[in-house]
Amino acid sequence: MKTQRNQRRIVAAAVCAALTLGLAGGAYAQASDVTGGTTTDDSSAGNANGGGLPQIQHKGDVSFVSGGVGLDESKALQQAQSQWPLSLRFTGPGSDFLADVRVRIVDAHDGDVLTATSRGPYMLVKLRPGRYTVHAQYKDSDQTRPVTIPAKGTAKAAFYWNTQ
View 1 (cartoon, rainbow, N blue to C red):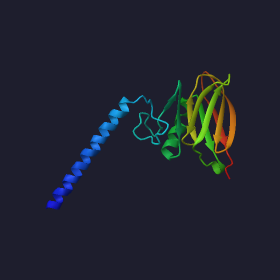
View 2: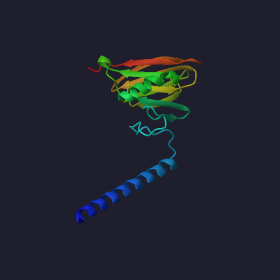
View 3: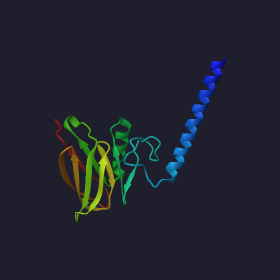
View 4: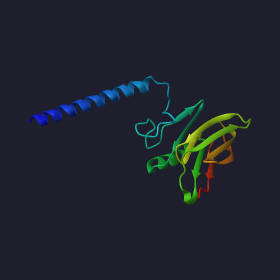
């Protein structure tokens, strides 16, 4: 009987602690200046995007989202491509998905527009119409692709590394 009461008290204390930590974490998140997640946020759970789409990141006036290692994220990113001006894909041999690709996008005047690391094989970027160059680096190998973002429509660039 005493053991059951002690177990109930321990469970109740654990639930209270978990709720307190959850509320404190929510208050911290509301007080922070981060918009749309952080570049160290590895999950898509609980984000406002829904449907498995990872958190949207913002650097300056450029928005982007990356990921796609899991099936839900992969499908969500593929379905969202038509809503983003630029879609990037990073693969290796046998269409293996690659993550941790360093991406640098520069404008026609060689000005930096975005520098970020992709969390998975897909990166979607909101850019203004114009000409850009995408620099992608996986491990020690660099590749570049010129892209033109149309006033209406989308642009795509695929990067492939022979990692074997």
